[in-house]
Length: 85
Image 1 (tube, one colour):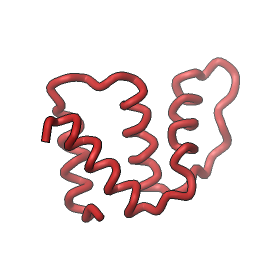
Image 2 (cartoon, rainbow, N blue to C red):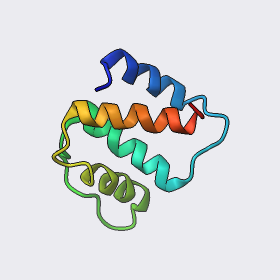
Image 3 (cartoon, rainbow, N blue to C red):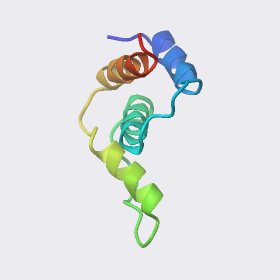
Image 4 (cartoon, rainbow, N blue to C red):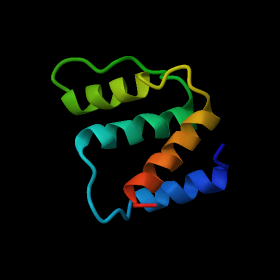
């Protein structure tokens, strides 16, 4: 399991990746981050033509039920993989 410090370090590292990940990976990072920091989705799904926020909400919803510790660990592992570690 990743510690809070490792998670925070990975968050900072994700902002400095040399290559921008694809949209699916960015959404996965977002969902894991929200699950790690806020827990299960706690807002209504956006409606209408708000496609960006709908995609982000769906990515978070996919992580539902995952513990904060597991989400932190997956986030750290994904960032390290993207950073080539």
